[in-house]
Image 1 (spheres, rainbow, N blue to C red):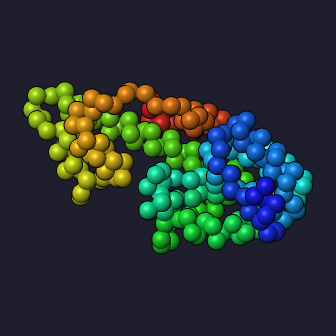
Image 2 (cartoon, one colour; image 1 turned 120 degrees about the horizontal axis):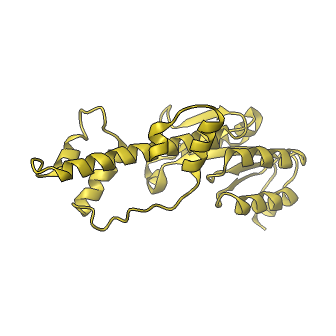
Image 3 (tube, rainbow, N blue to C red; image 1 turned 45 degrees about the horizontal axis):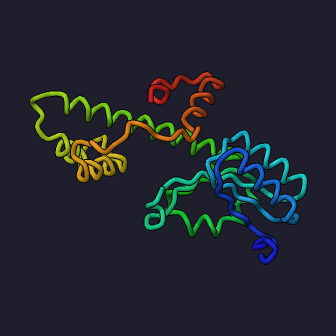
Amino acid sequence: ELVGKLEAPRVVWVMVPAGAATQSTVDELGELLEPGDVVVDGGNSRWTDDEKHSEELAAKGIGFVDAGVSGGVWGLQNGYALMVGGDAEHIAKVQPIFDALKPEGDAGFVHAGKVGAGHFSKMVHNGIEYAMMQAYAEGWELLQAVDSVTDVREVFRSWQEGTVIRSWLLDLAVNALDEDEHLERLRGFAQDSGEGRWTVEAAIDNAVPLPAITAS
């Protein structure tokens, strides 16, 4: 109903779970949109699905852009880092939206390449994120295990400035320790979004060793 009210050429941004939900949404939009319109998949779809969706929509004259989005709940205040893939002409139609969503300054946005490149880049980003979180967790556990270190939280806090391992993930870890010093409320489980597995599978397909990311 909303699509019919928008002026052409229209840009429709989709953010639904990867897989069947995205496919059904693309199918439906293919029947509602017209040549010259553009669909942006801003969810965490697999890059190989992007190629399929692009071909399906291109047959109807509809453009497709895949957008990997990072920033979480803090993106509203800080801006969202955007990694996009697709034809330059389609991205140009969406660029005003990208400019409004990205952080201020020159960083935080990249046209990573052809269709699939945006989600592939975001997938690798997430693989790196998981490995970094695993390293911080292992370091925290080792610090806590020895008698000589009496304040693990303050050790982590001291790393926030002047060290080569400072990062936003470290800042978030310190915030978590401030709320729950011994992380007693933390469950050792995270829902599988698929991106970690896809990263490892892509590494195998491309003969690239990823020992740290695979271990996480």
